[in-house]
Image (tube, rainbow, N blue to C red; front, side, top):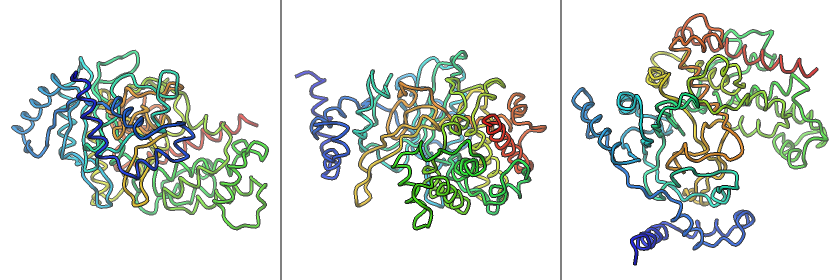
Length: 486
């Protein structure tokens, strides 16, 4: 019997040992069977065994490398050795839980890894993946994602495979690749799915566009004095107030589906507004969003607004393959989303200096800004994970995010995130490009400063003023686009 057959049997046995009745129920559910007709548990497990990336990994536990010069020299030596022999390196001890229970970067070990990577890979000659693993374990790949992957389908692998179920889950990946200046590929990309740069982090209390110093002539009335609680909430604030202010962004009744109208009615709840009065229902949702302080609730409400594609075209901007560096011409082609993300991060910089969340954010930004021209931050997200009724994680996500992400892959689902790609369109990369704007402003990058209209580099002391300039710029763009529609 060949080694490959022995390996297949061993791997299938390992997968079967992790597979529960809840897993099997999902495979047999109508949702899966409609998309993957006739899929059986055996066929699914055989497909997983074939498509999982079973590559050996070198493990580095940061607890074994004490802080200081000697520890850093030893750490760099281990990374250099591992990178010669292995495509994948797992780092333990660089991800922790915050006071709120979120997974975030443990900033001291994260900073040391970041600095070591910057020193060792100034001009990479091979592709390597460095995974910062946390306390969670990988789930099984979602069959609804797997059935979308293939040469003639929505997504494709160009290398690697799915993560191994039951093994420690990566939360942040450092992707080291040979530099390609033409395509804008930097020395290192940092692929994140959590941490201090997430849109779900809360802003300092009491922030409004009025308090920040935004122009009341540019900002709609309701927006100007509504509380900003997070960048995630702001994403839906902008589109909801654009919906309320400008008719060109609203879908008329004839262009909405029954599903959209039902979602509007469900969001508004009992009301005297007729179900076919889409515009009034939409305005009711706008008012609800303006009073929402919960980012998840604002996101759910924002998704039911029946906006014209015109707004989403404005929000996305031009899709570009280039990640870094972005010239002034590239920056001018960005949509609203990176600006909204940047405004949220900059506003968070204004928090009290004694506040631990503010200190951690500033430290995280300082680590990234040092490598502004050599590193690129990017998000990799696959939405729609599956849990059991008891709350146990069963399968990963089914919907790759090619809007906020710069890749279709996700550290939690795919081992080589840059090698899992959309076959239909280039990514939007909104989170990473928004972070890049913040780094460029901190470093006094000429093109970034010109694009944002800044006269001085970004520091905590001028962060509120800078956030105000970015927010005014967002509304200036929205108003200009609406004027063109008249």
